[in-house]
Length: 254
Ligand code: ADP
Ligand code: MG
Image (cartoon, rainbow, N blue to C red; front, side, top):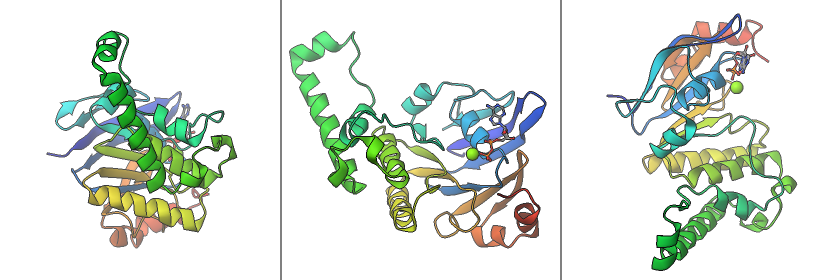
């Protein structure tokens, strides 16, 4: 059984079919790349899977449970989180606070009094601080920890977003174009972090629209075109597939 399984997804926007009978499965521990020309439906596929939008048809199952249309918070609770193509950090906050605030299960009001009595609140905050600091260090953002995130470069924002996402300690991490607008050095750094996370057992799905970037990183490539699955399989084989070459040279590509 696949860890993540999307079956027969359809999503229309007005007269436009953005996702057209799309089925994609991901096994536990896999590192999968989702490619396709601009407008192929990659982000919409992520949106359907991560609960940002509800598909018009089809189902999404996570670890055997039907989670179709479940909201992102509920999916995050089940271990699935995604980043967005455009980063969503809070610009008027420091890098450190941005990472800390992404922490899950801030004790709610109901449990607060009990926690205050027991001292568990301090423990929770201590753990959040420690985890945030270790992620900031792992992503080599320590020298920027007290900077406002508005002062970061595009690439540094991508690292910050990844660090924020990891505060949720996901089992399945979905990244929408983590390398877009990122310089080659930071791209390698982000790729290395992704590889480390996957080696530690995290299942990762990455969207990328450029042909070459993912080949060395992923176990399997899934190529979308006009909302449909065009080709999937071994990266080398996929990249030399006539249909993929045609899709990218066919005028659809940026
Ligand atoms: P990709 O991420 O592969 O570039 P998208 O999933 O963003 O593609 O978009 C697929 C198609 O759906 C595009 O034609 C896009 O314009 C359209 N689309 C995506 N989101 C919306 C939306 N919220 N409203 C209307 N059209 C949308
Ligand atoms: Mg997109």
